[in-house]
Length: 245
Image (cartoon, rainbow, N blue to C red; front, top):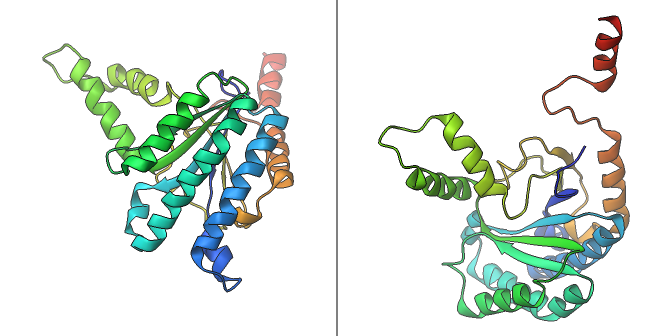
């Protein structure tokens, strides 16, 4: 069973800097290799019939990194958007960016706007890139919007707020079916917390620059071998209960 909107895969692209340092290279070399991995994975996602692919490119906490590294990351982002937008459009990929935009530079914002406009008609794959993104912030903003729209003098109940929050948070990209994290770490790092409530989690030691088409294919095979119960009982158990009733 997968999301009604089609299979949604989210990836925490971790390990660029460590990949580079292990090779005696500057960290930016890892981010550059990571951009090449994005291209590979997007192409393979189209072949595998993935409907939505969300990539964690830059978290709100990443601003604490050395300024030179942050500047290099956004230079690479601008270059990626400028060079790939037309290719994405030709492949029917719609690109959207989620996260805060008030802290991004005007050149970055212009490239985002151009890429989103150029690919707006894409229907083969919805590619979502999270930039200056924090799931906690997204939930807090959605909660503020929801409570502001509730015309009531009393404190709203959780039952009133929850469906509105769910609609607000998943309207653009839907709930996550499979969340992959590369780089060997086993945490969500403030990424799509609400949307991943029932996601299958897959952690791999592969550094993001090494992640390729085969890795994504294997991850999908692992996902499809799991039984998703969403709080229920296994299908075999349910059938047994029905048979003995």
